[in-house]
Image (cartoon, rainbow, N blue to C red; front, side, top):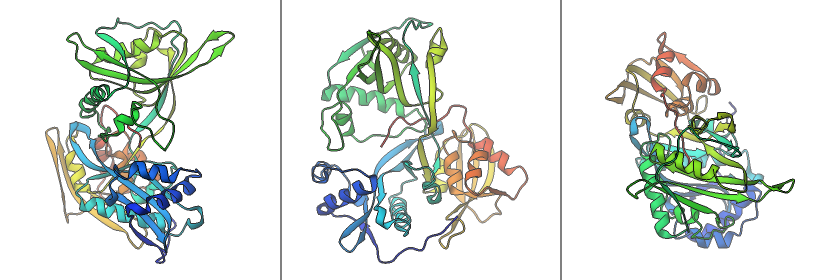
Length: 419
């Protein structure tokens, strides 16, 4: 791995509210976009945490951007970890390859550690960048496309589906369903309160068009809301026939019955030629509901949420394990650089829980923290993750196979929340 020498001429610090417009100007330049920086700055000032917004400065000019927000990650075994969701990261094209991104990452990770956050999370715009900062692809996403023409389901739907207009009450109903669902879905994170208002079109955003779509709620036999779907449509005609494309923004259900009913509702709409659902789980149960499972096609499978373990012993102790195992694991960060650090922990896991503490005992296994982070939620095999992160040193025969089995989970993680 190539190392970079940090340029001391740049000042890495938290920005002030009156520097927000300049910060967005730098971000837009890095993203090759022309933002309305003043409008967006006015929008975000009362909502963003300025103790989490970093800028790289050359004199008074912002040349790099990095921001995070507080969230909570659901873990295997339904434990939860305080997390830092990293987003809006960029460096001006005139200032690349000068160590700016590395210094912003180091500053934010140190602050995250001081706040007691266990993990950092992000979506990688470019795959090769974030592994060197200790992040690994921990959740896989996929696109499902349903051909609704003539589709039949094995079972009839129960309960009722109601189309509703966007309102604060509807947003709260959706939020209640999501919060109950995400607490039992490994890989999912908590959302900020105001994002629900953006998601249903109650707030306008300078980032792009206001959401204008449809919302349907599912109610059980007692009338309680236990699922919802949010979608939009693109009009399309083929040979004089309506074949519109429904774009599914999200669908969440607390019961199998609600999940089935919402998909049946979508499949039975008139004028629809296909239903496209992005950022779904590759393990979606949809095909198994259909008489013809081939009507649901999966594509675009790839990396979704990336994870970095900020507090290695705390993170490993917080998650559940589906088998027993005891290992001394040494994780390496910044391998081969002047800032290389090593964390050695003794992990003792069983079906009832786990303990994980720093230790001076001899390591059974040494590996990059990015590989450990990728395998953390159970959806990425450790034996695969090490291939992209310098391999692993096995100090006790069979230790890698033991660790690979210990971190794996029967059900894959999934995160539906993009940020």
